[in-house]
Image 1 (cartoon, rainbow, N blue to C red):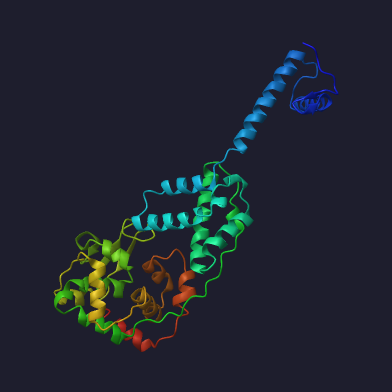
Image 2 (cartoon, rainbow, N blue to C red; image 1 turned 90 degrees about the vertical axis):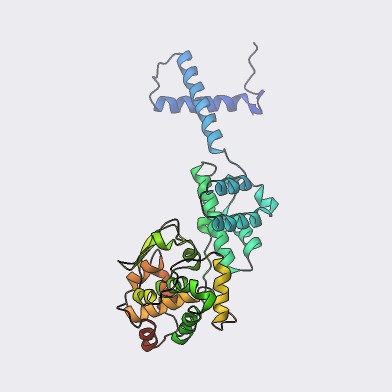
Length: 335
């Protein structure tokens, strides 16, 4: 075989370029322990190992998938979540994947500016949607890092927009009394336990629907057990069942009825509430708990919050109600 001169091209490179690369590799090998007097065959074998290892490393580092593939793979990895959680997750992913120019991009090539532009296009009109979209996009890249489809999470550098929390306005004790009275009448009697759990335990409506009174309520210890499968956040907690004796004296059906959402709406209407603020009973519980007990660590646990930040930003700084209202709400607390 006739050798090419140093001026001839080899794979787009001049022969002298190839020689320079070989010399640099040989110097690196000598620095790593290759004997100075190594034979030609030993040097060639060492160079082959270097080139093969380098090619494999480059291939592994450049291995990636499109943003769309990574997004749906991350959704499939969370198939064990609740239906409502998965429904929200799929909804947000679909919205982002409608941006076809972004969906087709290799995950490894996406920069912070690309992610910011994607979020702005999809969720720029709503701060709440933007925050949730950012969290989901962050989780997609975190999943990609674990799968080695990318090395960094570019969403880390995207600022989370500040939300000016709406003013918390709890129900008054009289409004709570209206609900309680409505629950003692006719078709609404089987909602009494549900109302008690919402009002005096601060349990979320979705969690109340999943409670099994026979398994999850200890009437002797006056405790409600929110199991991980019941909890919105996946973490269990034990709550005191305050005013339990009052509930037992009413001799109401201690059940969580079927068609719960529809029956809960009917009860509110029967109590004279034409409109209803979302989670207002949970806000009422937290506000009066903070004013009456002054135990924010206990309230954090009972609310199922990860830390005290939510209490500080919302309930502790809520519209000040009178201590008398809090005392009236928690009357007969020894029961």
